[in-house]
Length: 210
Image 1 (spheres, rainbow, N blue to C red):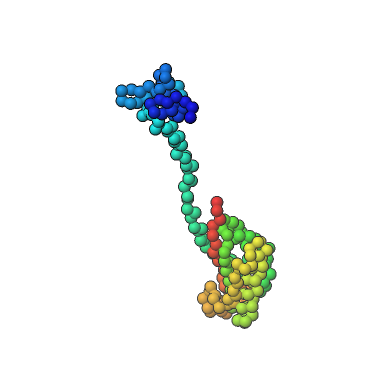
Image 2 (image 1 turned 90 degrees about the vertical axis):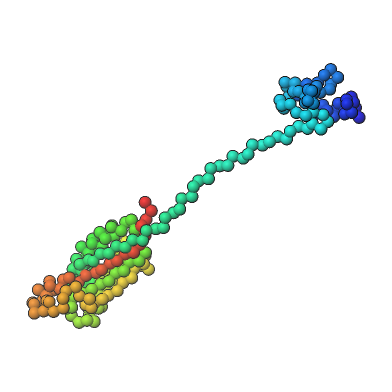
């Protein structure tokens, strides 16, 4: 093995370990009275360390990884369940004894839909009522045809037909007191029973995100 034997250790072995430390003219690392070797002012490791054949370079210490900040998890609030109700005068929606929507009736339904612009409808319940002029059977069929016409119009405005339930009540649930309009001429009775002719609409849905 080539090199100079110094204090029982080959200088060739010491050289890579002592680079940067002060040595004498023989190439031996200069030590203090406490056995410490001194840095020459150049090279690695400016600190004083124990020297000798056992000296090894200190392992490089990598800085701890910098963790990227984690965005706070904001819980999403549950959707708000809303309900809207309206009772429309059937005389505004239909001509007397008819089930075809009048232009004024379409406008009334458009106004109601405009009020629901921030609501996604889940269920729409439409119930039709008639007055008690005519037979029970006739009035039942008339109320069913009227709510069917309302449903058809709402579907034409983009509401899914599967969300709309309809029910005809005929004359079974009058708004007027029974017998209160008896003994009147036909025209007066029609006017007196006007509150009975109505369409009730109830919407249950969720508020759209703003």
